[in-house]
Image (cartoon, rainbow, N blue to C red):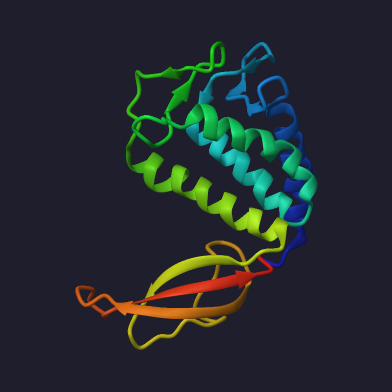
Length: 188
């Protein structure tokens, strides 16, 4: 985004090492962190798993080989981290038995509105990119503004606006925002 390859050259080998070190082949999941003795803490805290998945998803846009992690970590997220009875993502799961640690709230501002949502959004957008499919996202734009390549982007990525549909006007919004479904391809 900054147009300076220094940051890519600095970060790329480090994130590859982090992903490789954090991945637990036996469970298809990420470790929580390194312990002081150099061993892996195999407990799962939702935000760390989300961030590591998102790093692999960003890299998968240009190198689909990162899906060797994601095919497993997404399954772990869906099967183990998700509360199938009441919804949302568990705050913590024990690495010993893959059971939720229920001492933490499951819903709070940083979790629900940021990491859980962002994890789903990144997963959707990058999977569409890797599969060569269109990605549909929704925007509420002021009544006087129209969706175009210059007014919307797919979150923190770039992409080409393929087309869009406009929908209802939200009368209760200050600018009477209009809902747009925007379809992107070529997300990068």
